[in-house]
Image 1: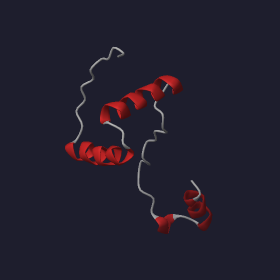
Image 2 (image 1 turned 90 degrees about the vertical axis):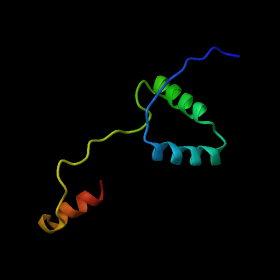
Image 3 (image 1 turned 135 degrees about the vertical axis):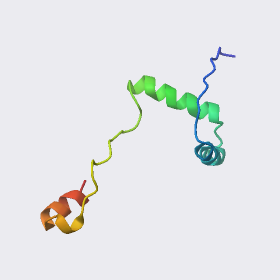
Image 4 (image 1 turned 180 degrees about the vertical axis):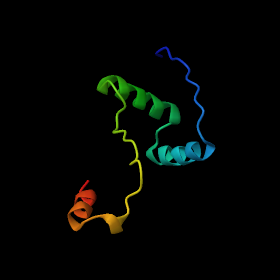
Length: 75
């Protein structure tokens, strides 16, 4: 068996429970899912999904022109 290392992480109980339900349906133990995530970090040399900052302020549809509205929807 390969050597392993422990990782301790704090997560919200609800998130952990929801993730466990999904992973159980996939047949993947939580420790394997975390290992898969870390392998992808190494392979992609970064977080394996897109990270975005939220818009600084909510858009008010009433202040947008039709062209601006369509541009926002196409994002």
